[in-house]
Length: 198
Image 1 (cartoon, rainbow, N blue to C red):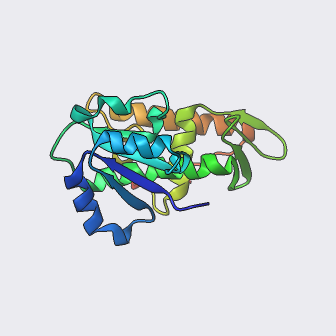
Image 2: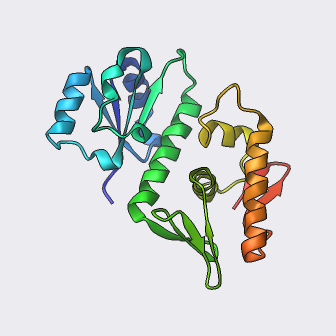
């Protein structure tokens, strides 16, 4: 798989900040001073759009919401100043999803998950997953340490101040219950005071 790219459009100050710390990233950063330049590159197939995401300022970039750009590949920032840590986490989870979408099917613990059909299975049974459940599984799979409800809010739900913590806990509870009922597996997602872990 080729290197993943984060395209920053009409947000030079954000590019400058990320460029200063780019050595800690596993992705490349591209900067476009205006939207038309970016769209020209995209139309000319100079960009591997399937393997990249786009970040821009929501107030200045309505034209990025075009038919050719998948909204799932777009991060529009409306509240400034922003916290860089949560933004980098958001970038990473989008890139994680792209990586696994590229692979389509992969192993996790004793299961095979197919992202196209949204089905997870073992040798005996299979279980249909929702998009949110897949997001939760992918996020937790990438993390070595338990993840708190706040981390899940920020990264999987793209945190909204209207989201209540019990929303996250309810989704995790339902997902764990599905695994118990379908696979008799109560340990797929473990829970501790530090958070949730696969």
